[in-house]
Length: 512
Image (cartoon, rainbow, N blue to C red; front, side, top):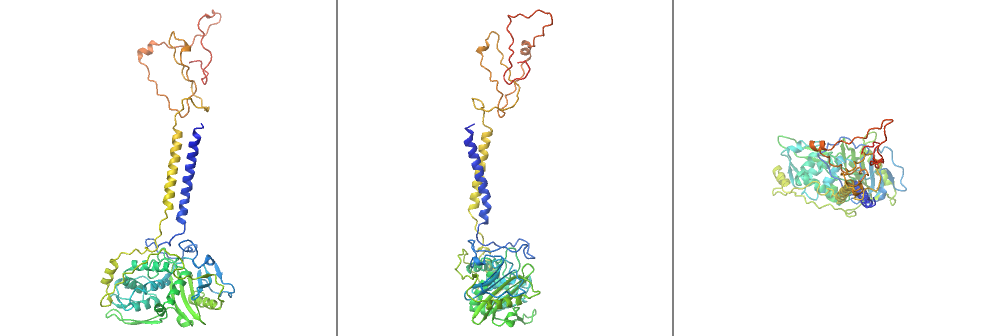
């Protein structure tokens, strides 16, 4: 029995080790890592996520901008006045563009659907890559794009600079599609957008479309929208685009007359000091908005996500929060808008294959050829790296369980030792047959029969085949002696007496 204890302990230890490692495997998956990616194959979101969005963080699990922003609720700077009424945005943020000081926020890192506010990232990514004078030819795909359109038609000639205006002022999804085509295709554009977001520290943002149309996994946050707007305002070329209020769309003979477009950002005309802004709306995102404004030498940015237009409109909520921010004294912020390089990022640089045709016009055929030349994975800059902990834990756990099973099985099929079992099994079995002693041989000369019952795990003895007829007839059957009748003579005392003791473990029958 003692020889079995080490094996038993080894089996138990191996089994427990395997179970612990397998239980720890999900933790390896849940460890902080790169941002998730979009899933175009999943159903298109049609409503805000149940229970609210997930909370974003840096790849190392830290909170970008400081631990003061690690909240799903409300946080404001010390000494700030009371918040204005009518703010129903699920997530919002107000920050100083120059110092980066965050004055107040509600769920700042909540990863909401961005809608067309994502076009600010499209502009920030493509503005340095595309020649503003490049003319892009409209396509049938532009005409049929889903959602808001500025009115591009197939065969129309549209300068990139005009497409930027249409992107920001009219939130044209057709303009976003044409710009992505000019930049080498949608895949290349999305890869560059995600790399840009990581470069500036916007780790809550995952781009799945250049227009902001809803797709599963596409997200941004109030904090990230503020980061993107800060970069746009600080760059002269893009800051000028944000200030545009009108633009003229060219006529396309036989298809479209020329017409004027106006900005949808009413803050440019209604709120003095506005530096720019971008609206957004989808069924899943609801209303979103980001804007910047200056007053008395101070520049602020405001971002709102998942809000409604009633009873207080989105732009009116933005104005009230900007007024509150300008009234909040500086120096007691709850966090900071990071600068590019403040947070470590593993994003790979993405070079856009933007074509430069000799005549300055990018035809649809040229764009298709440019998009087909370098294959770019849209998730190249955001694909999560698989942790080696998971396969190691699974493999080690599996080996430990196999070892435990093998040790247990070996113990179960072990043969009975030569000295017999030391423990007594309370199992009733029929007594073994006595060995037949040949005539003339003494019982003492025969080996003692092992009358102990076999161990329950011992194999059964092979069946004894019946003897042939002559042998069966040659051995007369032994029968018990008949009882002596009353008054009969006693039996001869000199005859050998029949043994009366029953063998150990036998039944009550006197038959051998």
